[in-house]
Amino acid sequence: MSLTAATRAETTKLFSTSIWWILAIVLFAYVAFTAGALAFVFSMSATGSLPGATSSAPPLPEDMLPATLYSTATAVGYVFPLLVGTLMVTAEFRHKTLTPTFLATPRRGRVLVAKLAVGVVLGALLGVVGVLASVGVSAAILSGFGLDTQLTSSGIWAMLGRMLLASVLWALIGIGVGALVRNQVGAIVGVLVFTQFLEPIGRTAAAFVDGLSEATRFLPGAASDALVGASVYTVAATGAASADALEWWAGGLVLLGYAVVFVVLGHLVSWRRDVS
Image 1 (tube, rainbow, N blue to C red):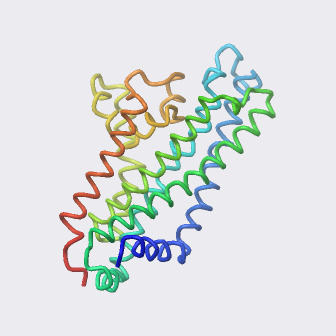
Image 2 (cartoon, helix red, strand yellow):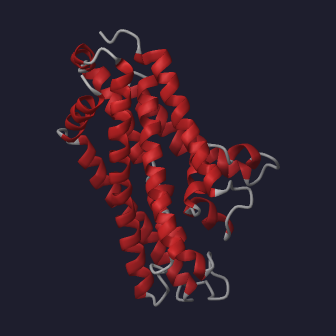
Image 3 (cartoon, helix red, strand yellow):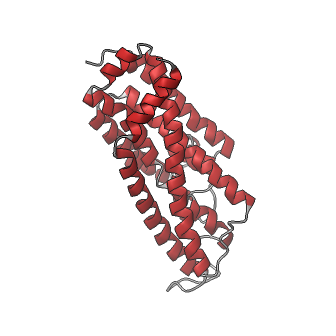
């Protein structure tokens, strides 16, 4: 089977199931709710209408509000393309559908490349969903408070493009994780524990421990935030962008490096083993 045919088959596998659009709906709702809540609080504070706050001391400078709120799609929503990418592979191990796939395409590397190609499309699709949720809700609330949405700024549009790139890279990392960790439950639990607990705790601790930020800025979530160029996770806590953050291109390379490492390790360690 050619790479084109293998890619077509992987596309059919993914989009003929319901998991991708269910997670896309959850992603939209989660990001929209989070961005809306933050936009409402920050906008009230920036306009001086939040009880106990003054317009001279908002949690965030007004010119940073749009980028920070729009970045919610990746700052809190990156786990969705990561999970879907992981499920693309682990579901096949769990249901043993890889057996007929490998019989039809004995070159297993070609199958993995086909999954990565579909992962690019999937990551971009989920990225668009997240961006629509965060930008749509945040811009509406900012506009309602009479604040500048900055939607005519080329810098904002460049950031939105980097957000789509980050979503694609997260999907590829998920495929690599799924190829490396065959057990579906183990892979999902590992992803959630690391992304929702271990890394956030480490990045929070870096704000209080001298020198720790030099290491935590190379964590995948921190690299993703650096690639995007804004993050409610880092900015909301300090009122300014982190001085220790990587340049956007360096963050992108680090995130790409994680994808390459996981995919290569998955191919070498697990992908070539027997599947049944």
